[in-house]
Image 1 (tube, rainbow, N blue to C red):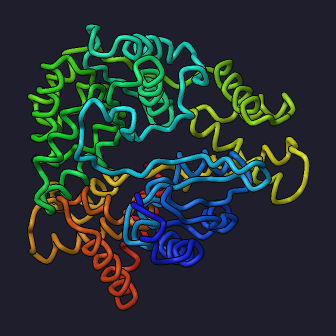
Image 2 (image 1 turned 60 degrees about the horizontal axis):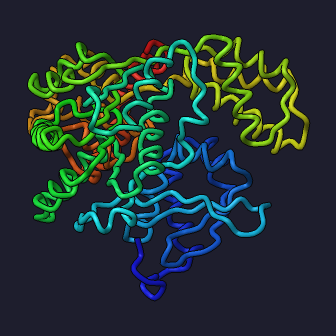
Length: 458
């Protein structure tokens, strides 16, 4: 966050143009033109950078799909972390939708709790979470924890389920409800990747004590996607001690994962055993009625009038997760806005067809590592070690290259998946594989085949 307006060295236009250059390198051209080209830099002051967006859907889509890329790009372009605010261009008066900057606070006294940045998205509440049979138990547990943090037997609360089923919504809804009922409590939400990044940064800056104090002073700690603690031994150890201290003080811990506790075998056994101390609740894919209700709720929130036949068509044909449903509705809206037409069943069919393409499946870095290791005959754990043997180094660089090409992770986060390597190593790996492919047709075909298998078989 900027300390004063005078500390701003560049205009909002300068910073945004530099940010766009970085963003363009990290996402595909179509996504860039759809979601970033329409944004306008409006203001840069002590509150951060304000971006003009066409409508509220852009705010939510950027938050759910490109928040890390956006934060990282602006931080690199400006040289410092800052908050991002959205302003819907056709709304008056000026009322920005704020995304708080992610940062570590060194002060943690209870007197400053109201000023404490919890890193929560205020949109995620229990009121706008549509409950279905597959999420009823998890939602009830989340409400119980939010209304009596640290005072129930549900500590920790671990919510698990597939991608896009509402885990992030529920965990942040807990934080927002605690804020509403007990505003003086310190609530902090983060992902396991951000926790790891903060931890590494604190070691590099000789601020490990401040890091530990910050996390262990929380009254409610919410950590998303703990499966990404995989292969991060030092981070797991730090979190183990943080967990123990918070639990002993009866502070509330809430975690999410994409798989059951029994399948978290890649984490330390002592850590997994602690996750089972409280309550484990799963979220299942929503049934048809719930999917229709979710789309209707989304339309209601955004004051949209979408014919029932279109809503039902989307709900019947998109069955995997909530994020897919909301993404389809957003794409449909984008098509309507860009073509200046009314929403039709034909447009809905086109959107469903695009989403249904195998190439649009979300590929994870873990899947890339697994398949690359198998393809090159290298054990997966060698990718994380400082092994400079040529065949291992090439395989590792290929995995980094594919992670840049096939995921939306920043080069910083990709590096963390490969034993804590920095972003410069990832950029170098991408360049080396690109050059090798240009000069070696056999190698190029091998990478093309591996990429095709990742895109169409995972």
